[in-house]
Image (cartoon, rainbow, N blue to C red):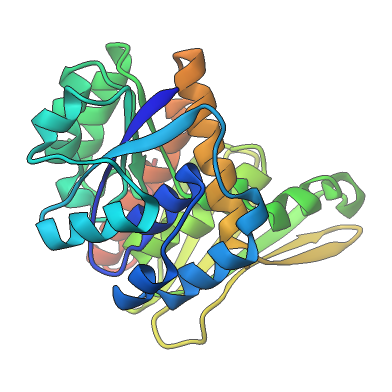
Length: 305
């Protein structure tokens, strides 16, 4: 049995509660609702028959606030609340850093990387060149670092991926989502890159504005994609593919399924002592994320990757 630690929590991110429940196979709906996440308790209830990940258990939790730690522990029957990251590192076989505030990722991941403990880091891995270089260097040293958005494992995209050949040569791909570029642009890119078998991006250009992000990504194979992240639209994650022979629309909604598949892939990776998702794929996405931010700051100038 793999003993997992879970680290939380950043504002608005319910992953510490939901992922712990998915892994441990139990949840306290009242506690989750009290913390402000009724949608989480709803999808856990709808999927009660598939809760629980074989071969793993969250045995330890740490957050910056003991009240939050106690809530997560109560939600998923977690045995131990660690007093520090260093203490957690001495108690677990692997860890999930379930915070989506990338500026804290290096500091929070370092105790586990230094201790050679496999770590999964919530999206986005980094948002500065310096932090990405740190993780790249640690990966090059053989450290076990896995990071992605769960949209890499979205069933809606995998269904359409089976039909790609029938669309003919792709001419255009568009993606639309709600909220900000940093935390949610990575969702769309993860789904998009995975769907297309992770083609190499060569340039990125941000032609929108903060809160109304419009980003062009050009790939090595010549394909052009556009991503649209708008704060004030209705919640959505959609990807459209336009080929010479046909087109498809993906409306990505099944969060539970993608979360569970993501966790399973991490657990399988720990069992195999190597990330099943190559770090280089994550690195390409984060470079694109950072490049688009740089483009916005430079007034829409094309950034070559």
